[in-house]
Length: 267
Image (cartoon, rainbow, N blue to C red):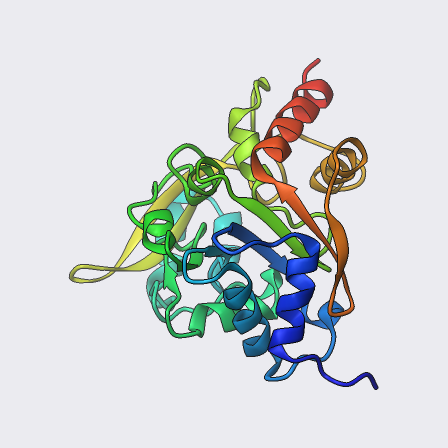
């Protein structure tokens, strides 16, 4: 087994990839792909902190663990009854959604991380712009205008992929809102959340970020867009630990995503 990399070594890997102090980065990472690191996930977060420095910012998709998501497969007028005994979403305590990766929960629970208050589109952030990115986000269309995704793009942020799956570039959900595509699919979800006076049931309305904004047969279109972007742009690439890694310009990526969707989703 390879020796565990130190935090300093991992930070050096990030610098060689092109990460700079003061950067705003949206991070997608696979701990398994990165390989052994001292202090494991905590060591990865520490390396990311060191790489961007105190003037930098880190953003991660967290989501929220929800064992009652099946309720939203039922007719809307029955959902509230199903949710009576559901554990309410607590922005500070509910664990990250399991399928966003192990590092997301470590990132969420690391001292200094701030989180947005949303049961579907929850983000965690650290650093100079953390509160600016996560405060007062939209309740409906939480990946659209006014969202942390738009804010990190406007801050000149980049997307850092550390061995993550190709279909996990959350920023492309923002492109779904910008793309001129007819009859985008929308959904309404019911969630039990902590309110000012205790648990309440609230409805979230948004583009369908689970099954996609249109019927699409074949490979996940986020993966296809990512490949198109990498093939047509000068993308910094290298190893961080043992993870094949990339740095993507957020504005260029969204532009590529909008163009791809309008080409493939418009009759």
